[in-house]
Amino acid sequence: MVNFGEHEISYLKADVIDKPVYTLIYRTVQVTDGVYLYVYPFIEIFETKEAAQAKADELNNI
Image (cartoon, rainbow, N blue to C red; front, top):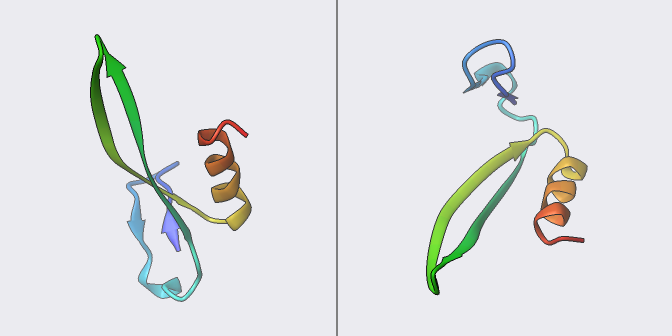
């Protein structure tokens, strides 16, 4: 389980290490004056599969 840092510093809580989290790793591509600038990796952790899928859909413009 991850404390997402809303009220304190983020960290992995050892007492609930067996609870699943969903990790989304992605990169973005930025083009400036015809030059491709890759900004990566972005890593986000979600508490639910649905939240991770919603972010993936948003990134894919679905």
